[in-house]
Length: 293
Ligand SMILES: [Zn+2]
Image 1 (cartoon, rainbow, N blue to C red):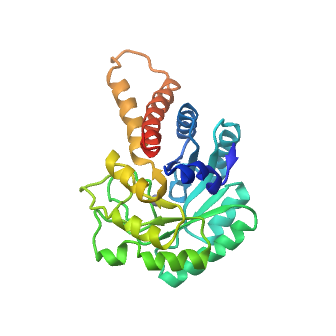
Image 2 (tube, protein in one colour):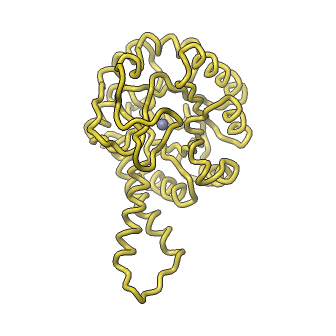
Image 3 (cartoon, rainbow, N blue to C red):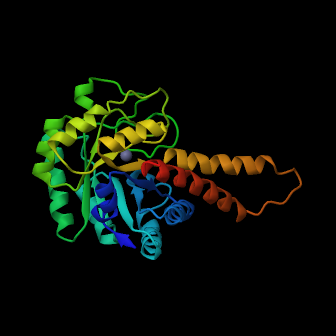
């Protein structure tokens, strides 16, 4: 069933685990994620990132996301990931997204708060939930990221206090904007890690002491089970996950193709099925970790 972000996280908030938010940019990823959600019996978030528009346009994939969400036997939220402007969020709401992320974190604090508050006002008037970002979650400079529109960097550089989310600022931001969920920066980055990330997992607890709303982890792919579960125990309730899911689809297709002999026929329609199965298994593993199994 199609639900909002608050609704899909309802059980997770009550029981203290996290819901997976998986990016989709084709029919195969939608099918893999919905099958994994139904097999595990857990609600799930279908993310569409604005930066994936060169792969598939929002208008084209949203009806597919909505159709699968409505027919699913588990709660499914259809969420815009990293919306870069108020206009993009409005367009997403008009297309039927039940939740949007406004990412104005590249702006200064005041502009981020003002833009986020405006999106919250518009979205809440039609029952749509809003996620915003405070701090800076970078993107790694190689590979296909769950991606963000921000500065490309291979690791977390710069002054930690300027990059990681400040607990007092988070409290002020949430009170001023009324956001439903907040993406916080504590050392994760989008895409494939080129170096082991230095995580400040205690920062999540410090922010939670100031403000009790669901926190979102971006750039989760590549962390250990222990790192994920500590972040969840400290207050993360939504985890964005994409890179390792799509890598697994690619790996499975490559493995299958490597077995094909020179004169064998290969039907194209069999190739997506290989990717769907592999991505489904990867998403099941992620959902189990996020459910503290
Ligand atoms: Zn992200």
